[in-house]
Image 1 (cartoon, rainbow, N blue to C red):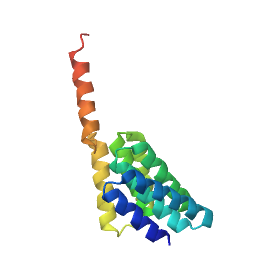
Image 2: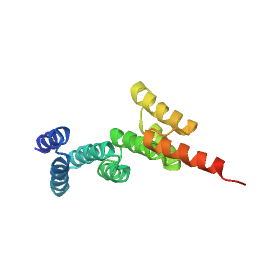
Image 3: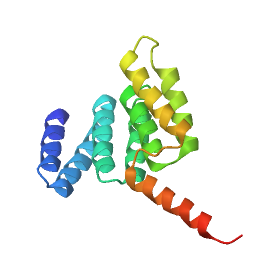
Image 4: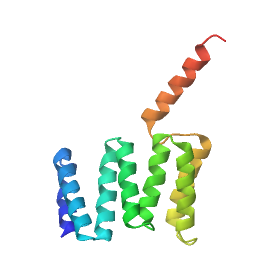
Length: 150
C-alpha cells in the first residue's frame, strides 16, 4: 500500500509536479507513522529526503533522514544519505560524525558502501564541498578575505 503511494508521489515529482508529489509523500508518511509501520516510514522519509536534497533544501532532507533513523536506527541508506547531506551542506563536523557512524554500521565486506563512505571521507578531508554552489560561495569568501587590507 505505502509503496504504491511512494511510486505515485515520486512519479509526480519526476514529472515536474514536485509540490503535489511532496504533499503525497507527507500524507503517506503520516499514514505509515499512524499504522506503526517503521519499515515503510523509513523508506518514505528517505525518499522525501531525496526529493528535498534535489531541491537543495539540505536542512529538510537532514530532518527526514533523522526521522528515518528514528524509525530504523540501523537503516544503512539513511546513514549514508545523512553523511552525504552533511558533506554537501559543508557541515564538516557533523559529516565526520556521520561518516564514522556509517563505518560502524556497515559490514567490512560491503565494498560498494565502503567505497561510497571513502569518497565522502575524501571530500571532507580535502575540504571539498559536493555542492558546486556552496563551493563557489566559499571561494568567493576566501577571495574577499584576501583582498581586505590588514
